[in-house]
Length: 230
Image (cartoon, rainbow, N blue to C red):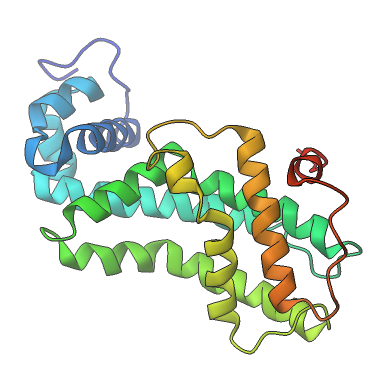
């Protein structure tokens, strides 16, 4: 054990790196890049300050690593959620509601929310990071979603001219209300409110892109949301 590390510090190089990344994200999200210090991050990670420099370098390099890694983690969760995307759905609306709910849950995930806040807050200091994070996360997810929407269009379920734009619009309709609901990711979103937002977003998407008029909702949005599988 390195002098200064706590007895409960994670063992192994990978475990230490993950502990540092997690602690750095919390500190950066809580205090901002300018006020965050390596000393505080080291204390929160349960490692010695030199350990951070040995693993990830100084504060700027650490910040870049944190955003890239959290973007990759968030992207992995989003891609996993898309694995259940329907290819030949018997009930397109319910399938899209289910997938939409999983995507919305990824959006309000604590780490994903912290990542977006940091990107917005620090874009003036790190303008290159915005595109780098998009390429390592959201852009990949958008392309994956676009491919699935294109397959639905080819199968006759949707009418789509630009799958990439349609994918972005689908996500926008699902998540537009969520920043306000979660106070930019600083408070949990009620599951019922999340489902209602998803149902409304899917309904609007189908009204725009479905090849046949969508079936009318059986009642208030809350009734539809409560029927979603968990």
